[in-house]
Structure formats: structure tokens, C-alpha cells
Length: 209
Ligand SMILES: C[S@@+](CC[C@H](N)C(=O)[O-])C[C@H]1O[C@@H](n2cnc3c(N)ncnc32)[C@H](O)[C@@H]1O
Image (tube, rainbow, N blue to C red; front, side, top):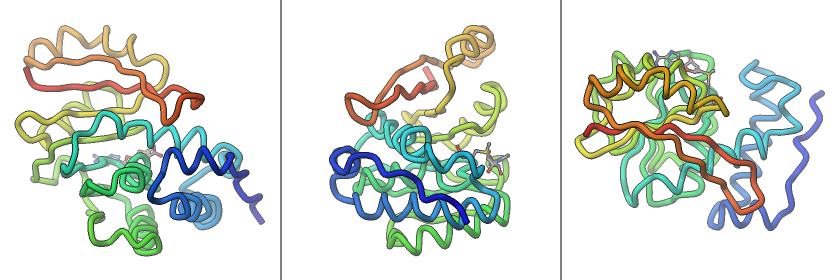
């Protein structure tokens, strides 16, 4: 039996998910139970689901324009796509995930959270998905050159790729700056937080010049 994920202070959940605090709690319960049982979340992660996974993902909301359609590439158990959809009821979100086991969890989670009217699950690899979105998110997907190769074709004119990365994001960007410039891409590292005391989330934003 897995330990339940310790809850953050209720006011933190309210601040990050003002219109969906109960749904965020429900999502974390799903990750800590079904997510762990099906091997989508490591059992040791249950203690840090809120800070390391959910708030970390929700922080990206500040970088997404109003009312747009977002695709979350390699969504896994819904990160960052589901926290983003819960924080931003104005967005439509497509969760793109090729693996059956993960896509099945996503379908069940979207249904359980009552998000089916604006969140859909597509079981496919990025390379095989031929639609364009205003923003393309990813987290722990792939090294930057491969990630850009997968995500840029899904980005509509004027849109951006938002890749959640670890602390070595700037190094990775520096290593690939010549290749990105040759493709006429503008890339920068941004730091955002879900609320003032939350851990920093590092995002690489890539846009066409
Ligand atoms: C390390 S997991 C990260 C999952 C989630 N984004 C997270 O942060 O927990 C990488 C995910 O990318 C998916 N993936 C791998 N290759 C992909 C591709 N070519 N197109 C779309 N998704 C892919 C995998 O199935 C997996 O769910």
C-alpha cells in the first residue's frame, strides 16, 4: 500500500489552482495510487508529487498566452499538461503520448477530473502527429536538439516550444546555440514559479525568428 502524498498547505493549492483546487488534490491522489501501481510514477516520488511534479508543471502557465490550444508532447502521467489545464481553464490541451499504458492512464484521469470538454488524449509519437498548436510543452522528453526536431513542426506560426528542463538548461542551450541559430531559432532560458515560495521551474523557450 502506497503512502498518500503529503498535502501542501491548502492556501498553496488554492493560490496555484484557484478554480480547481479539489481537482488538483484528486489528480495527485490518482498519481499516488493508480500512477504508482501502473509504474508511471516511482514509489519514492509520492512524497514530492506536489512540489517536484505538480507545482513545477503548473508554473509554466505564466508563459502560455490566453485562450490558445496547447499540445503536451510525451505527457506521460500528464505532466505538465494536466496541471496546466487545471490552472488555466481558458486553454484547450492535447496530451500526446505514444505508450498505451500511459495513454490509458491519461484518458482515465481526464475523465475522472471532468476535463473531457477541453482536454483530449492522442496516442501518437510527435513525429507522426501532423497538427499545429500555439504552444508546445514538454517535460523530461529528450535532449534539446531531438526535442526541437519533434516539437517545432507542431508549432503554429508565432507559437513557441516550452521545454521544462533541469538546472543544466543553460549549459544545454549553450552547447546547441550554433545549431539553433543556423535554423533561425531564438532560444532562451526562463525561470518561473507557481507561487512566490515555490521551487523554481526552468524552461527553455524556443521560437522561430
Ligand atoms: C521521461 S517521460 C516524461 C513524462 C512526463 N512528461 C513527465 O514529466 O513526467 C518521457 C515521455 O515521452 C514519451 N515519448 C518518447 N518518445 C516520444 C515521441 N517520439 N513522441 C512523443 N512522446 C514520446 C514517452 O512515452 C514518455 O511518456
